Image (cartoon, helix red, strand yellow):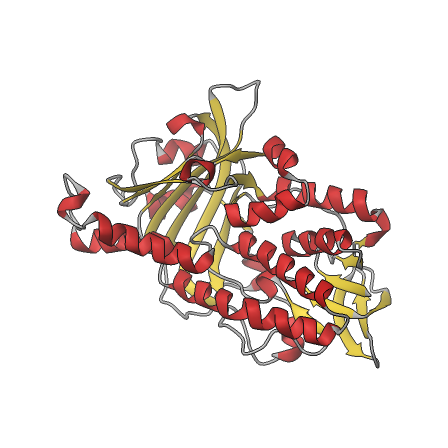
Length: 405
């Protein structure tokens, strides 16, 4: 069996490692000409870390990430709502990692090249089309200079993100992604540690939100952490057409962020204005997702990760669900020689679960607990339990965890 993977992001690389471990021949085709450490911070949740641990990657994760000990939900003005222990501190078998997306990607890419061989990752190959030829799939690619090439395999996996060409092949009229009206400004900079250097903070609801978590430590800077920060501001109505595709990761300025966030977000742990001003490289993204599909798998072709279920980045679940996709798909392919049946079984298992997470994330995911409290006490409170019972707070967060794990 041979598998072609269109897209060399976290989903595609993880799938390649799992397929290789299962003895399945795999090649990745990535449209970028070179691989850099792009992006800022993400979280990998314990259920996904368990799958990376099965690949023997925990030591490498410890080298590049931070084991998150606790998550604190706050109002936009810094009032504590709920503290959740995370990972090992929550009694789970695996940690949660807060990590630089680019460093995670680089680690996975290095592992693929080490284990599969460097020729199994082909760069500068943008998928333009594919066709089924008997018991195979033939994919066509184009390089930046216009040169065309083809590759044939038993299966084609679309791991090519929210603008997936594989998805568009089957859903040509789907159009642009669905924008929430929220703009996200993101950056990372070294700051003094707070909360033990392993604490994550989410402050504010869907209209104004600040997210903070450390993504790296350095023995040469023992009192500091590389702090990932995200400022979310709702600037348009739900369903407004998103900014043009070329603006999806444009560089922004300090003034862009502070114009919207100053006076609307405040936490005691860090000074937001100082944090933003000290950051080299601020990036702006629209918060987008897509409606769930009625089907991912079409014979010998299927989708994975953001190509299958792009979701709002709340609940720290995007990368984690992609990793779970990879495990499920690998397991189904090892259970039968009927690849069409395997892809259909993968679809039937993963699509309903991720569709529910997409829906819950649109409503705020576990972070909806903040909107819930702020709606009841818009002017703040002395004790959160005067506003909401512990059972009400835990139910919101717990219901999400039950679905996403």
